[in-house]
Length: 128
Image (cartoon, rainbow, N blue to C red; front, top):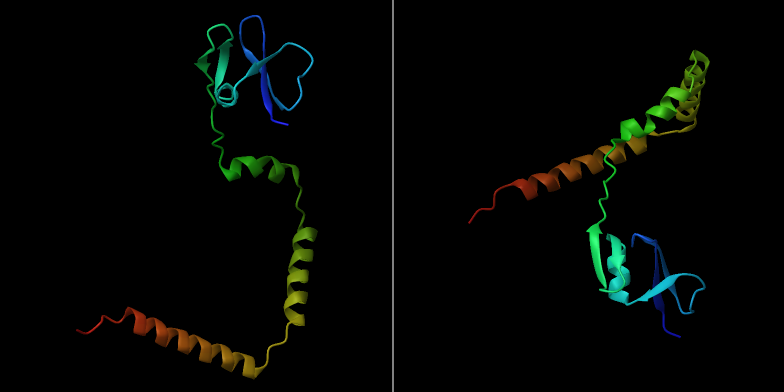
């Protein structure tokens, strides 16, 4: 069953709802083509007699920096010195549970030296 496309209009030809359905809906829906259905998302008015869209929708993008969006959350959270102390203790406790051996340190140093050598080879100008 193929899809049909419908829109609703008020008395002033303002576009209301858009509907995509294989069935004929009940109510004051006007059947439109797929192209008209897509255009209806961009326009505010539609004349069903002339099949012409008018008045482009003016959509303002949301341009609010992250800090402004999270400011309300930051202001609503009370931080006490006890909270900070608990965070520090948790951090120290986590670090204490991680054990590194001397061989781990040596392996890391060898890897860093190897990476440094490879980078120097890549960055060295090629000789013709």
